Image 1 (cartoon, rainbow, N blue to C red):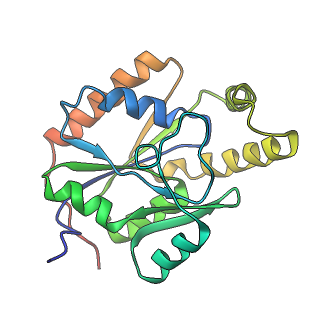
Image 2: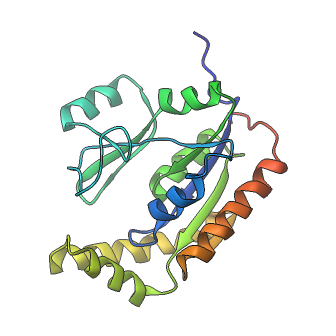
Length: 200
C-alpha cells in the first residue's frame, strides 16, 4: 500500500505536565463534529488509574517499543521521566486515509522531530498560568514523591523555554474558557487549511 505520509494535515499540541492537555483535548473533541482525530501514542509507562489501553495510550513493554523503533514504525519518539513515548506512523496514516486532521499530543522533543519531517504542521503550546500553578496541579495528582516532583518542575521550566518555537500559545487558566479557545483555534486552522507536504 502506498504511504500517505506527507499528504495529510497535522496539528501538534505540546505543553508541560500539569498544563491540562489531555483534559482540554478530550473536551474539544468529545462532540465529534470536528474533522480532527487524536493520534493515540505508545508509552512504556504503566497505566494511571482510569486509563485504558488503546484509548489513552497503547501501553507497551520496553521490548515491544524497541522492536518497533528498530523497524522504523515511529514518526517521532522520546524518553521522558524514564519512560519512552512515540507516535506510530500507521496510527497517523489511518486517520489521514479517513480524510481527517490528526492531532498529536506530544512533548517538545517529539514536536521538534515532527517539525523536521513536516515543516507545515500547525503547532500549539498549552501552558498553565505560572510555575506555582504547575506545582499545585502536580501535588494535587498525588502521584509523585518530592524528588520526582522537583525533577518534573525542572523539566517544566525547560519545556517552557521551548514554547517560542510554536505558532500558537494558549494559557489554561479556566478550563471551560480554554476549551472554547482551543475549539475556535482548530476551526480557524481547518478553515484556512491546505494539505501539508513532507519536508526534504
